[in-house]
Amino acid sequence: MGILRPFSRRLLPLWLSGLALFAFLCANLKGYSTNGHTWGTNQVLYYVNANSIWLSPSAAVSAIQLGAQAWSSQSHANIQLVYAGSTNGSSLTLNNKNEVFFRNDSNGFVGETYWWYDASGRLVDADVVFHESGLHYYTGSGCSGGVYLEDVAVHELGHALGLGHSSVPTATMEPSLPGYCDLTQMSLESDDIAGIESLYPPTSTTRNTAPAINISSPANGSSFGSGASVTFNGSATDKEDGNLSSSIGWTSSIDGLLGYGSSLNRVLSAGTHTITASVRDSGGLSGSTQVAVNVAAAPSSSSVSADGTTVPTTASQIVDTTGAVWTIGSNLLVLRNGASVLGWQTTKILWKSSTIYVLGMDSNWWQWAGSSWVNVGPTTPGTTSATSGGGATSADGTMVPTTASQIVDTTGAVWTIASNLLVLRNGGTVGGWQATKILWKSSTIYVLGMDSNWWQWTGWVWVNVGRTQP
Amino acid sequence: MAIICAGFSQRTCAVALLAVCAAASIAFASDSRPVPLAERIQGAEVVVVATPTSVDPSWRENGFGDRLIVSRYVLQVHETLKGRPAQAMSLDLDGGTLDGMTLRVSSSPALAPGERAVFFLDGGNGAYHAHLKGQGILKLDDQDVVRGSSLTLGEIRRAAAAATR
Image (cartoon, rainbow over all chains, first blue to last red; front, side, top):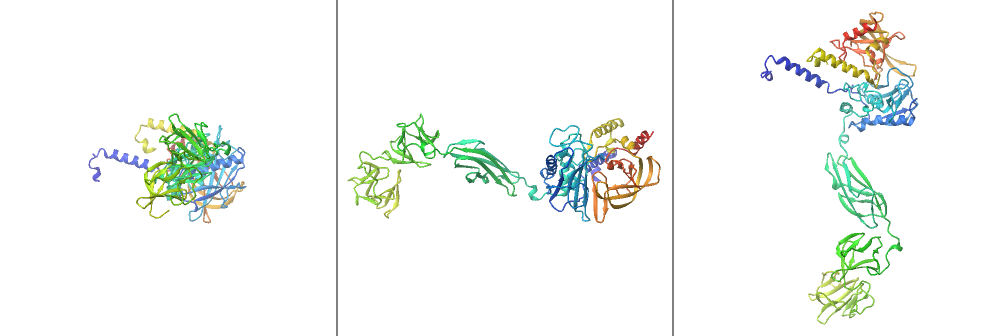
């Protein structure tokens, strides 16, 4: 009673009237009605006798299925109506078979549902009849002065799941349709959803929502040259789990699994790929999206440049065995399929022994190793220098000065030791290195340094490989 | 509605009620097409205010091959609005409980003994049935207002008197 003290006695009746109005409105917030009777399964099978005077069997079945799906697709209720096939049944009978059929009669009703439950309150049978002699039934579109079957079906099948009529005027389960050709009943109102979820409470799985996923690259329908590296970027978010981008799995319809993550680069096989990005949340629900990507076929052997082709001397471009086209840009940039290759500049590109070489601005030849450039010296690959003794590549195990006076490596470079023990490559020093021996082993140059360690020439630097002879 | 109208003038409330009635008249039910009250009265053979006092369910088969539970109610008649006056009459209604099974029908309300209502009835074989099924049974609350609506028994009486004049 203390709560009434601030109010005067004159205001008390008004306050009570307001309270009564509030109570009335609150009582009507819940408009749906049930008796609590439910199916003992979460998948309720139904059969359709599609013999209608207005509709084709396929149209009738599709419309009824559409109405049935609304209850599971628009709510999180743990229940699903499942179309089980056709039936010849056309009577309202307790036979433990849920049948939906048309009846060429008119009793003032568009549709009726008869549903049965046992002493334990479990629903055991539900039959729906559409009376079609008084109204023209339509599906999909084109209705005029009639009703859409799917619109009536969603209401009647709500009864089949145990719902009564709702007092909410806009609810699907209200007793009345808004009018002819209505389709609004197809969208469940919050009252309908509350009703069906009260009968079939959502489980943790049904309450979970699937993650949303997006591919930002490659664009759908994009094309790439053979051997091109394709960049995959995507993002995934989940209402429950948040950002799942790092868990995106990428697959190709041709190459299979490509990898995981929000971003990755891959070279794809030739063909039209359906790229699928998918992700699964902690609740077990998956989201996925797809794009189509076309990768050009590798050029035929006849289109691969001839061995020894040079740009710009003998050709304006070189096509390698992957189909990539090598050119020199106006600013001397090395271009591969029109794109700069690590910003390298050159005055000449050579295609030799199925390998790309460029003559760098430092007058050394650089070999393309797929992802980096490797210095192979000033001698044109596949030739020997004027200062070299020339000839074929030295035999494996050749050692200067023990077994030979020089070593010729696979690039044709000639390795010798000067009188002052400087290591010479085509007559020039190699980093000022001094050595007492040069060894040609497994197509690699090693020298025995003044520190008694063996050093390997990587084409770029000397690397200590220890005191044991390779 | 009665509570909401208590705060407004009679004129305002009448306009609101007319709007509701107008809206209802263009709608038709997914279960049925609502038939205006006057039309229901004219279409029914008998209109009474009554209370079911007992119910007797049985299995029956109709001309469509439907095998249903049909409940026969004995109605104690309080007031006859149309038709020959009688103290009691029988009403058959689809639905009911028998042999451990219960049948519910979307087009008909579940009726329990003791529930006072206005019944619009048509004749049958030994018993009446509800005219237009669920639309032929308007349950009344203690204030003589049709449940779920603002329609009063007084308005039904006046409509019945007008229709049978």
